Length: 74
Image (cartoon, rainbow, N blue to C red; front, side):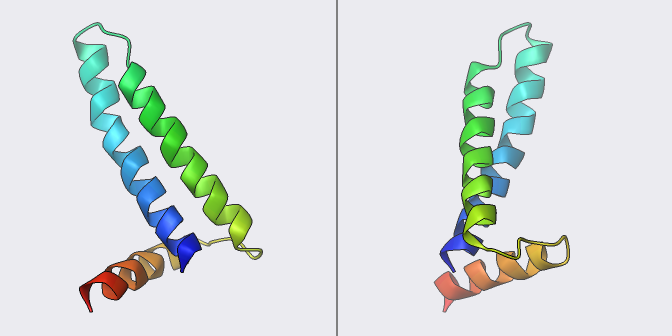
C-alpha cells in the first residue's frame, strides 16, 4: 500500500506542476517552484517503482488511485 500511496501522491504533485510551469513561462519567470515539484513528484514515483518489483502498468494506475482513496475514505 505504501507504494500505491507514493505513486498517487507523486503523480498528483507532478500534475500540479504543469500549470505552475505554464504560468511561469507566460509571465517570463523561471519556474523554480515547479521544478522542485517535478523533482519531488518524480522521486516519489521512483520510490514507488523501486518498491514494487513487478512495476506498474498503465492499467494498474487507476486501481492504485482507488485503493488509496478507498483506504482513507473507509
